[in-house]
Length: 470
Ligand code: NAD
Image: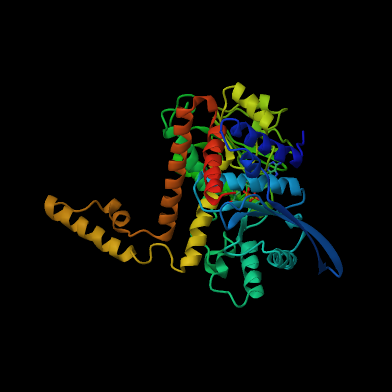
């Protein structure tokens, strides 16, 4: 069953209104918070392959209670204005929940990137950027896009370059006009992996918290079975970290053309190489391939991670999901109706606005790095290394023993950018989990983690609106 993007917008709206019913907001404020401030539709032509092609795109600004506004840009042939508005609303909620100082925005271009060569995509992206720039919908202090479905660091580098060209008298902070750029263009170590890394931290935070049901009582991931839907940026990184670092078994990976399965666990890195080489996960050596079968997510597992697109779990397939925990790595993968069905079957859901916030958290670090013009850790790294060396020497003198060789290098290291980024992200994901868990403990009537996350987030937005007097 295909759920429309109007259905997605409706689901976000229903979640919003359900959470609002637990909040005593001044009259009019609730409506102000729910409504999307503006959605700009852009149509433009690009001369390609000897003729003119027309493209349509959108940039929605959901809330400017905090500026700049922030949110990804997706390239997808099924994109539309409703989907973009729903995603922009989720961005507002997400930024508020994890306490990064942005309002919510989102953009899309209705295009299948696989139908165009890189040179053609570059021309299309640059034209799209010119349109956004004309309307004040891109810029370090107003609106800061990032990658999403169908876009990555390459597209962000083109957008940044086009923005710089269009604003030649203000290039000092121009790099901060987008995040998710390549390192050589002002990006930050760890941005590409950030959302998948955040998914890992979210699951670990949930398992560590004794107030949660864990995985049917279990609190570690050793041997836990995992199904991942969508083997793109987010799904691949989440699968990689959970299997390589935490001992989980990813036994099903589902994609748009079917799924692959291996009960002992798939070799994630090799599966990615296979996908890059052949253009599909199907036909992977040593695993069973189920071409055209879209029911991979219905297999039995401990953890199901939908990491592809919205509405993946809906009223019709929710009854057939056989997981203890559903971890929403994608935006809006469980519809409002499906959410009720899953919960009635005692399946726990970790909500998207928390689970996939890692991307925007590390984007925030990148934006700050671009504006301060100094890499994280530059001023302290050597001093920290010398201090660690002094501690190691003191310990050796006091004990008369040599510092263990296997941990020496790690102990002496002063902290590279990637370590600082991961540590900052882990801190945000852990403390945000505590906020959600504490709120649900204080107000058990909220009933579930999604409602608790919405309530925590909306309260903060309401405070911001009240403070600025709107
Ligand atoms: P991506 O384009 O890198 O990957 C998406 C993958 O899903 C692709 O491999 C695609 O083939 C697959 N897919 C599409 N339709 C499918 C279907 N019906 N069944 C199975 N697989 C399907 O995109 P991404 O950046 O990994 O984003 C995935 C989700 O995570 C989206 O909902 C996005 O909004 C969300 N998200 C992404 C980020 C980020 O930093 N990239 C941050 C927050 C949230």
